[in-house]
Image (cartoon, rainbow, N blue to C red; front, side):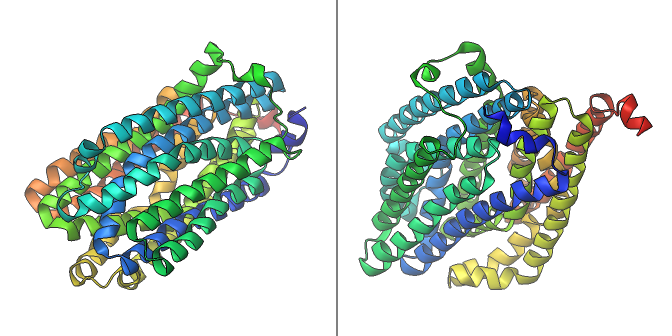
Length: 454
């Protein structure tokens, strides 16, 4: 039965579980982020700074489709974690089967739409002027590989819900290493330019997909599904959709943010300003890997113990996760503030980009020490299956605060107004999340009589 091996989530010390879950997740995110980072460095040095901007235009489109898999994975994994905690393995299996069917159908459908309207989508996301042609080359090839990425993202979250973080880590490492090797061969040795970068990315997605399939077919996985589990079950589908919509909505807002930022910055400073944002975006993915790793590690622990009714362990997991991720966030903040100039020179020697990026990067990372509370708070509501609070808190940073700020502040302060919007949105969303998380702990997770006596 699936719950035998996953039972450690309800018994082992929280600090040990969090490290056990978060460390592989952090390493996986680190390698994946390094892949994106080094990929950008390769492209910037071997093709040119315009190529960095071109990839930045394509990312929100491909990532949104891939985020379908992540959304379905996280939504279904919340159900699986709670089902395992309650000893309901049949629901866990049905959920997993529905996740696979849903991911495959939706990702393929969106890829077809994306390829049909390619000439309209690329300019809409900032692929204008000299950026358009390289962006179109990259976009066309990468989109074919995105369904494999969507299935990988879905499967990775299910692997973690089973309590197998090391395998989830390997699933994230494989495409990263593959992409870097192929980048060197196709871009540097074979001089294939943007086409080489795109082929390397798509092939790496397929390698990840192959590993995830192997895991679930092997004895390592406890979720052994059959054909009956692939048929849609409306109650399960509804729960997956409601919880997964939180992640999908977040990625949709991220894509809208890219659209706005690329267009606003193109109008304010042309291709160079778009490149500045592309570099900062890569650093956001890379530098925050330990904080995101703790958040990923926290999800199955909170979900399992909530399903088992262990309120004390849920409270402890929240407090420990916030503490660990806050310390890591502070270290990230110190590193960015100290080494921002050195970081930028790794990507490009374009004098305008080298001049403008360090100050912008410092503004973007200014509130990093406090974002842990916002991330853990919104993740908690998703882990316990409360879709609406999770959705609202997830959207608070970029949807409710950042987008209005980035539309208003540049009118008065120009390009600096764009960068100031980042820390302001972080502070406001953290305050909102702190209020609702504290309220939830006091009302829902209050100590039982036995805990008080103990």
